[in-house]
Length: 165
Picture 1 (spheres, one colour):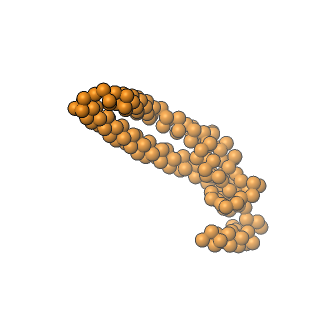
Picture 2: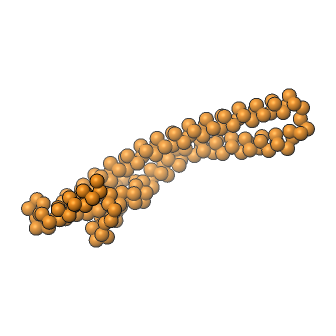
């Protein structure tokens, strides 16, 4: 499949598009855009603030769980059988609660992260289209095995995204 793309691109460079004498191709590193652009940085800070309280709660729960476990290990010899089973049950209940909350946290965070990434990608695609039209590019790629640095317009995209509020 990839070799077909290379063949098509090689063919494109030989034939003029839209009446021009030379095909103009650009490349954008989409990973850098979704990691380094101003909207991406703002989105990830927003996510951190949004999930900070739940993450702190999880850390406290985990610390409590570790404390109960260490107490159980230290005192298991001196406890009666009934007390030991009660504490083990409490530990297992607390452990299940932690695992449930941790799983819910991770799922919610992943969903919100995906929502933010979709928004960033949509915005980046609009900016890339504007640059392509303004600078008369015939083709802009966002995925490539190799891209010559001379056709890389990622910095232009990052600068344009920095101006978007």
